[in-house]
Length: 184
Image (cartoon, rainbow, N blue to C red; front, side, top):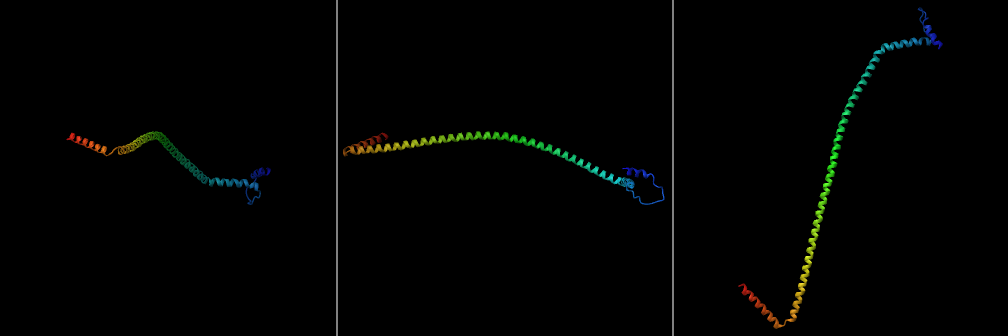
């Protein structure tokens, strides 16, 4: 440390003129060299440094402006998206309400349609049963009639002799003649 202070003190004791040479004392020459280099850098580099700082300042300002514009655009898009979201939510609610109404209407229609179909099937079943009963009754009547007729013919054939047979035919011819006279 003492050498550094001695070198600064010795700066004031240089010989005024007459000799030119190399000073080999590094500690004594460094502050001078540094001050010269710093002075040259400040003198010549001030414009370059100022230009670099101005350019950097402009880029930062442009970046801030672009960021503000992008932020404004993003806010605007966000508001548009929120508005679209509200609209879509309202439409979804309306679809939901309409869907529930439509489901209830279709359920009611299906219930009514099913009831009507069941009623028609019941009516058809009843008509079919009545038709089949009537057909069965008719078949039974025909068989009973056929059996009665066969029984009557059998009884007549067994009971009739020729004389009774001729009297029956004569009586029937007489009735037909009387009916003809009445109609004339």
